[in-house]
Image 1: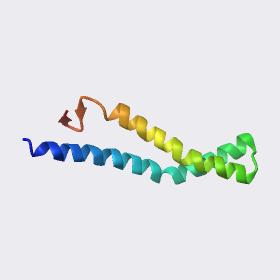
Image 2: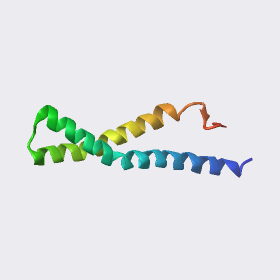
Image 3: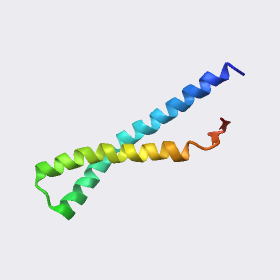
Amino acid sequence: MTGLLPVIFIFKKHQKFAIRSFALTLSAISLRLFKYIIVFLLQTPPMDTYRIVSWLGWIFNLVIAEVVILYLLKNKKYNGIKT
Protein backbone atom coordinates (compact mmCIF):
# COMPACT_ATOMS: atom_id res chain seq x y z
CA MET A 1 0.00 0.00 0.00
CA THR A 2 2.93 2.36 0.58
CA GLY A 3 3.81 2.25 -3.12
CA LEU A 4 0.40 3.66 -3.98
CA LEU A 5 0.74 6.84 -1.93
CA PRO A 6 3.29 8.57 -4.22
CA VAL A 7 1.09 7.76 -7.21
CA ILE A 8 -1.91 9.37 -5.51
CA PHE A 9 0.19 12.45 -4.67
CA ILE A 10 1.41 12.78 -8.26
CA PHE A 11 -2.15 12.32 -9.53
CA LYS A 12 -3.40 15.16 -7.32
CA LYS A 13 -0.61 17.49 -8.45
CA HIS A 14 -1.27 16.60 -12.07
CA GLN A 15 -4.98 17.22 -11.71
CA LYS A 16 -4.38 20.68 -10.22
CA PHE A 17 -1.93 21.49 -12.99
CA ALA A 18 -4.44 20.31 -15.61
CA ILE A 19 -7.16 22.56 -14.17
CA ARG A 20 -4.85 25.58 -14.29
CA SER A 21 -3.74 24.70 -17.81
CA PHE A 22 -7.33 24.38 -19.01
CA ALA A 23 -8.18 27.75 -17.44
CA LEU A 24 -5.30 29.43 -19.24
CA THR A 25 -6.29 27.74 -22.49
CA LEU A 26 -9.72 29.32 -22.18
CA SER A 27 -8.14 32.75 -21.69
CA ALA A 28 -8.32 33.36 -25.45
CA ILE A 29 -12.09 33.05 -25.29
CA SER A 30 -12.47 35.17 -22.18
CA LEU A 31 -10.11 37.78 -23.64
CA ARG A 32 -12.47 38.34 -26.56
CA LEU A 33 -15.51 38.31 -24.31
CA PHE A 34 -13.99 40.88 -21.98
CA LYS A 35 -12.98 43.01 -24.96
CA TYR A 36 -16.56 43.31 -26.18
CA ILE A 37 -17.87 44.00 -22.68
CA ILE A 38 -15.28 46.67 -21.89
CA VAL A 39 -15.66 48.41 -25.24
CA PHE A 40 -19.44 48.38 -24.90
CA LEU A 41 -19.56 49.57 -21.29
CA LEU A 42 -16.51 51.81 -20.88
CA GLN A 43 -15.75 52.83 -24.48
CA THR A 44 -12.03 53.05 -23.76
CA PRO A 45 -9.36 53.73 -26.40
CA PRO A 46 -8.08 50.61 -28.17
CA MET A 47 -4.67 50.49 -26.46
CA ASP A 48 -6.18 50.87 -22.99
CA THR A 49 -8.72 48.19 -23.81
CA TYR A 50 -5.93 45.86 -24.92
CA ARG A 51 -3.97 46.42 -21.70
CA ILE A 52 -6.99 45.83 -19.47
CA VAL A 53 -8.20 42.79 -21.37
CA SER A 54 -4.78 41.17 -21.60
CA TRP A 55 -4.54 41.13 -17.80
CA LEU A 56 -8.16 40.18 -17.22
CA GLY A 57 -7.97 37.22 -19.60
CA TRP A 58 -5.29 35.55 -17.47
CA ILE A 59 -6.07 36.73 -13.96
CA PHE A 60 -9.82 36.05 -14.08
CA ASN A 61 -9.31 32.51 -15.38
CA LEU A 62 -6.59 31.73 -12.84
CA VAL A 63 -8.76 32.97 -9.98
CA ILE A 64 -11.63 30.75 -11.16
CA ALA A 65 -9.23 27.79 -11.45
CA GLU A 66 -7.94 28.33 -7.92
CA VAL A 67 -11.49 28.55 -6.60
CA VAL A 68 -12.28 25.25 -8.31
CA ILE A 69 -9.16 23.66 -6.85
CA LEU A 70 -9.75 24.97 -3.34
CA TYR A 71 -13.47 24.34 -2.97
CA LEU A 72 -14.43 21.52 -5.32
CA LEU A 73 -11.37 19.31 -5.05
CA LYS A 74 -10.63 19.67 -1.34
CA ASN A 75 -13.41 17.32 -0.27
CA LYS A 76 -12.80 14.34 1.96
CA LYS A 77 -13.24 12.16 -1.07
CA TYR A 78 -10.95 13.14 -3.93
CA ASN A 79 -12.07 11.46 -7.17
CA GLY A 80 -12.83 8.19 -5.47
CA ILE A 81 -9.65 8.21 -3.39
CA LYS A 82 -10.11 8.90 0.30
CA THR A 83 -7.41 11.15 1.70
